[in-house]
Length: 157
Image 1 (cartoon, rainbow, N blue to C red):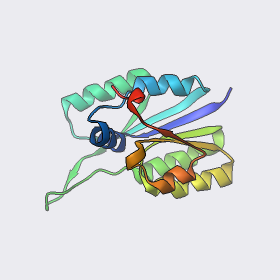
Image 2: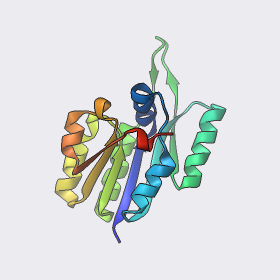
Image 3: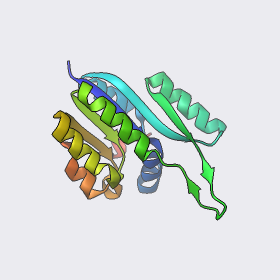
Image 4: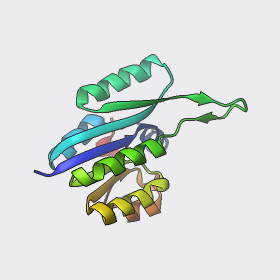
């Protein structure tokens, strides 16, 4: 059975599905689809901790589905902008996991991950898949993955 590792850039998926469709992503449907392809041996969801009750409820739903939640604090800068980025953490976890699985699945449209996918394909001969909103996913990321799965209405609530 194929071993699959799943990595979700929660903020990216939340904002891109909201912008493109005005709807939320269906993580249960995703889990069912991916688990039908093999054994999910690792599933991490990376989010920003704002100490918000709705967010805690959402994270509990993800935990019940089977995800491990990784949180970073929400940082509000003095100029009013905010920071909440998991790119380095996701990259480290993928690099540490890629050599132990057959397939790495990344949910993100962030083009910063293109070099990561190319590197793990080359170094570990692992298959890579990306799920992203077509209009909001970097073409370089689409090109770097073995398979691009467009997030369309069938993966939304």
